[in-house]
View (tube, rainbow, N blue to C red):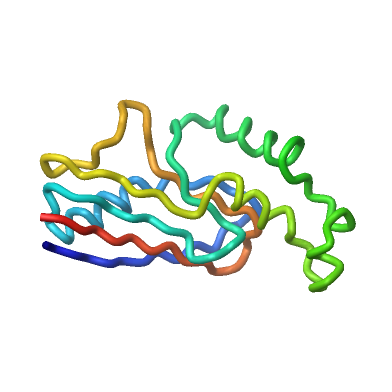
Length: 140
């Protein structure tokens, strides 16, 4: 079995951003030379997400609106975490929990086995500081 691990550090310009990282996933797979297996992609911070969805800016805006309006509004005074820690990012933690912090992408015949519209994304919910993502390719 071949294994390769790589990392990417993000420091977003905004507090919230969605970034397509599919090319990073493929680069990890290629470095491992995996033709049958998988690539694990995991955010190494509890206020960020990794998820699979469509690469469409209107959908990204819908996701950001959905998180803000229905899941975890950015209302620092509304969360016990913020009053107990002095931080203001409880909403970011809840957003990460909602979208998840990792995905496994299958590899078949030397290619990422994604659907026709699927891409892998890093979701930053409390940005403007360095955060890492780990990519781990495993297989034959």
